[in-house]
Image (tube, rainbow, N blue to C red):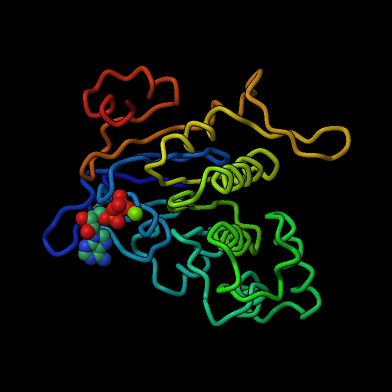
Length: 263
Ligand SMILES: Nc1ncnc2c1ncn2[C@@H]1O[C@H](COP(=O)(O)OP(=O)(O)O)[C@@H](O)[C@H]1O
Ligand SMILES: [Mg+2]
């Protein structure tokens, strides 16, 4: 789905990513952890084509995007949903306009159709009643959930999350993590989750969602199904990948930097 081949990126002579290579298969969850300033957000911006690497290749569904023009990049971006740090809503737009932004912008859907889709997306994050509210009227956690609903507009196959749980209280954090697990297990979304919240990352790597007989979503840790094998970690140290593997391998890893991070 996504591949980096020996990607180098620098800003004003400062090298931020060095020879970064990895692959993300369809349906995989890639969790990128690392200290602040280690280059995590830069990787997401490169996937979106918002910035370009100095060297190396970035492939999305086998297509090298490093040489694409802005117009072609717009169509690549359409398959990708982005959940920004802090939700990043447009303050002057209502929740309806924020979530339906992409549809209003494209202008190909009927008003009633947009309304229905916006309500479905808000229902997914449990905020249908907030449709007429303005961002300023929402709590931090609600803003984050509206940000997720907006990222899901157009049913992207890939969702990128930049620190979606940063600065939230434990209960709200749990709500966000459950939404991410639901998207993975019930919708089959491929995701890249950038965080320094190792606890949230651990939950994502050890719980899975199923729907019970009454249609209720259940979260469980027992008898982990195969899909939990489809979750992999990358640890960045100053723009280099210093570890790549699954959750168990991360916990068992002996590399000193990994130990310092994990402990
Ligand atoms: N647009 C930019 N211009 C200059 N420097 C940048 C820019 N974006 C990021 N950087 C620098 O690149 C490094 C990595 O940033 P970032 O990817 O945001 O780290 P992280 O998300 O891991 O905290 C930091 O030193 C940051 O200051
Ligand atoms: Mg960042």
